[in-house]
Each structure stands twice: as C-alpha cells, then as structure tokens.
View (cartoon, rainbow, N blue to C red):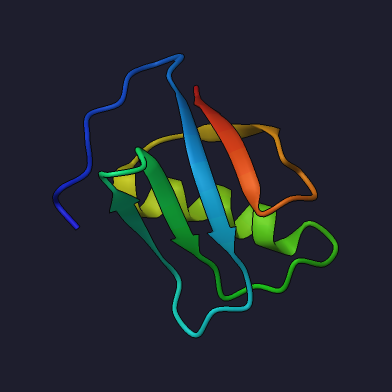
Length: 80
C-alpha cells in the first residue's frame, strides 16, 4: 500500500469504486493510473461516496471532494 504516487493540492484522481465489498481499502493500479476503492458501504443514499471520502482521509491523509461520477462506479475527485 506504500506504492501510492504523491498527490498535490488541486490534483484530480480517477477512481473505480467497488461498493458492497467485504473489505474497505484503496489499491493503486499503476498500469491504469487509477485507484480501485473497495468500499464496504452499499451504493445507496450516498453512503459509498461518503465512505470513499473518509477512506482517502484515513489511508492517505488527503481531503478530497468528488467532482464527477456521483452515481457511477467511475469517479473523479479533486484534492483540497
């Protein structure tokens, strides 16, 4: 999990969300330059999106905001 690239304020990150997973963690796919976000929450009432934001704060100490893909598994976030 230490293979994450360095990110800076204003960078955007692409994410493939995988809700309703048995685990909750982030994995960096170096070939595709995308995060796979395994989320325990279900994709209902914005629960998975909220978990995704909390997961970035917990795992990478980054504050992020979703800027596209609110109702999709493919998301884009910006670092605040």
